Length: 178
Image (cartoon, rainbow, N blue to C red):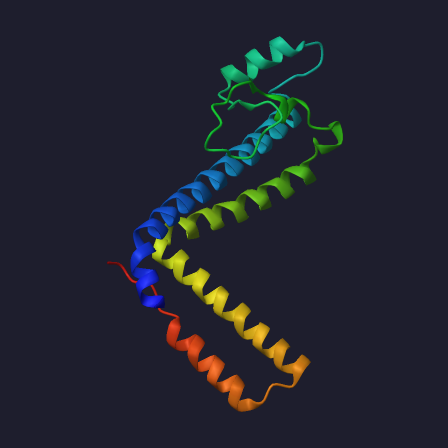
């Protein structure tokens, strides 16, 4: 029965939701780090706190390190739990096009950072059970849309539609803390 399946795989599923939530939090943290570093870097260039003229890459790397900028694996900014930052680099900053070194770009990045902060704060307040229930709600909405599309396409009778919807509602259970 569906209840037996839920009981059988509850702990496994719960563990995967813990991993998923941790992954999502770490991914958002990484995105925030990258955006924040870019905002700071552009502002320091615009305010002449970092001077690029006449410096080679090694000198620039030393300056960025002394200013506390984070290094990330070259060519790989997205979060990967298996990544050990094997080839740390400031390329995500030093390879930015010159035309992105504007106040307008800083404003755009700050807006992105604010949006990511909101997403991160919301995620931190949610439990794995909240995520689980949101997934169940999404599945139910998709299923109901599919039923409507099916009905429109094949002209299903109301009695069959009502019986199917009733079964879907009965089998869907909200997850609660055990």
